[in-house]
Image 1 (tube, rainbow, N blue to C red):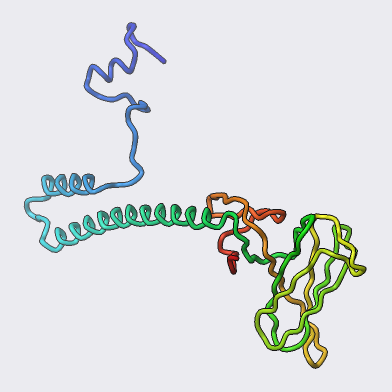
Image 2: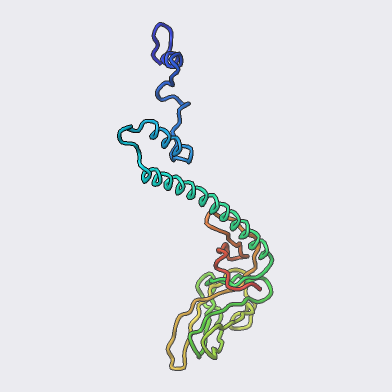
Length: 226
């Protein structure tokens, strides 16, 4: 910092009752609030041209702008409070699902050492739904077949055994569903599986469920709770 006769520039400004340029004590606000508008309006009235004073229309217009700014600030505060309340409600909803099984869209099953797994598809009409189950190496281990009497939800279960009736090792298995109608036309279907909820995670964009063996899924993906 440059000095003159041992006195710094900052001290000179201070002695004159001024603030030195680029001083950290002077900070500009990014937005104007209600007090700023009132100060500007008061200054405008004090320095207006006596020969051309501000008319009532201008005053009303500026007061309307002031009310609009205040209304927007109040609305922002209300919306922020509403968002916080919704976030808290989501956490409670997610926590209530821990320990329950939920139905979510997935192309994989997590098979345990015992028990069976369940799934569901939405059939476009009457016919048959076949579900091919493949292991981690892409080898088909079995095929399930369920009749669809009409369009709508069709559920199916897998006991964890291969086509020869042998119990398979625990792990992830992929399922692919196909619908065949009465005329023989085939249609690929999206699959949904049931999985237990182990915990919940609060993310920046919402709540996520941690599903056993399947990873995370947004709360909005849940179709049904068992």
